[in-house]
Length: 408
Image (cartoon, rainbow, N blue to C red; front, side, top):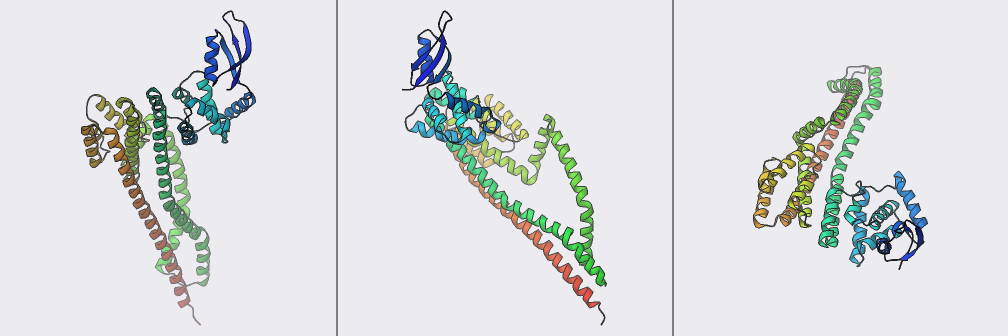
């Protein structure tokens, strides 16, 4: 059993030092208090230097835990709890055994809070950069019902699916972006490097240039003049929009405008609807009340205009309106999805119904992203190929035109 060195004061105010054996720091504090002592400092024997070094690392900005540690923390904690450990013992072991500094510092910080008598959810709340409100509320509900293991499993599934979706999203947009960069590079190489040398050669040879070559040269001349101006205007506009978005009115107006943009708006709405349904299902399955679950789920919408509509829908639900009807008034949820929500409400299976909706909607969103990615890639490829073909035709036509004007 671990031993703890302590310093404490008795009822008369006298300070005493000693050692107490206990299963954990919380138990050591309880034993000291039962003796009529008020603990001033309690540290496990043999871990003082380790703890000090961890605290020094935790104070370093480079070692401060971030949201990247959320999923690894939940997975490591769940693994030990499955083996029969309590949450406190699991955190104590993780704070001593983990290799990753940030994750170890996170476990050590939570373990220290537990040693002060705080609950796991309250201790996690001390790290707002890692744990969001819905995670803390779910852990709190698991502690109240004694079902912390199932809560951890559902949270791991939830965040794993979110991470997988982000990976698919990045993968779907990476190829079109790569094609766009290559196409822009081809245009810049031709306009800034190849065409000036070709124009000098054709001018030195003399002769009349064909229309396609003249159009190409005119385009290059306009591009050389207009591109810097467009770049400066773009930078100024970006700075202006950024400052505008720093205000509440600017954020709300720009987010509302984004929702009306043909492609970007559809993407934002689809992702927000998916996150709302999935998060609401997870919260309801873990015993969070409907009111709290709706308030937490609405915050998953990254778009402020959409979040405001979800907040109004939540208000209507709390006033007694059905969830499907309240969501229909936002104008952002597909009719088929609303019909499925209505059926789930009528059958009393709202949480499982929302999870099924989220699963099928995720599959539909994956197909939509795949189609959009292929469309963008094909469009950029066609545009780039057409431009390169036009360049080749203009050059060949100019060569033939100039060569035909030679007199031997």
